[in-house]
Amino acid sequence: DLCVAAALAREMHPLTVQLSLDGRDLTAEFLLLEILNIRRAGPGVELAAHANPADGRFDVVSATSRQRNRLWRTLQARLKDQSKGHQLTTRRARHVRFVVAAPCNMRVDDSTVSLAAQTAIDITVRRDALEFLLPG
Image 1 (cartoon, rainbow, N blue to C red):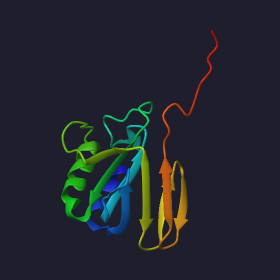
Image 2 (image 1 turned 180 degrees about the vertical axis):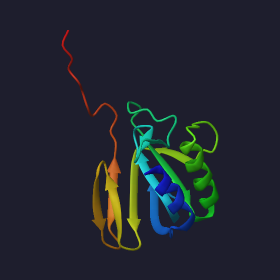
Image 3 (image 1 turned 60 degrees about the horizontal axis):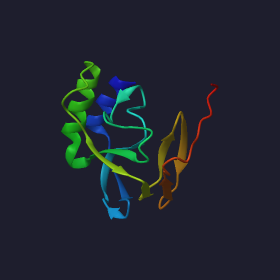
Image 4 (image 1 turned 90 degrees about the horizontal axis):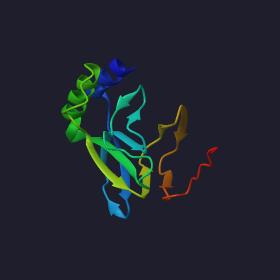
């Protein structure tokens, strides 16, 4: 899977996404946009080295069309099991809103969801929204 992703990074067409993180507009043409609360995505690729599922924020990892070479180098480093160096842009946010300009597929966990053009998605994480009770 990672080999395919690296190969596609050279050829894929970007998707225009109206992206807002905690109200800050970051609209761009994206090759990769991952909203994570863990370090790894897809085929076990570490994208957010400092992600903490308990910090109440998403790690939004992205690569724009201008960062195509950076994306390719990062995926190549991951193929060589190098987690250091070649990092992608990562921003943290409690609220993520995005609107896709064209129809596309979005991966949610292990499923794929088809989105129509102009579909708006709002995702919010609330700190301490999940509690676990463990046996003594």
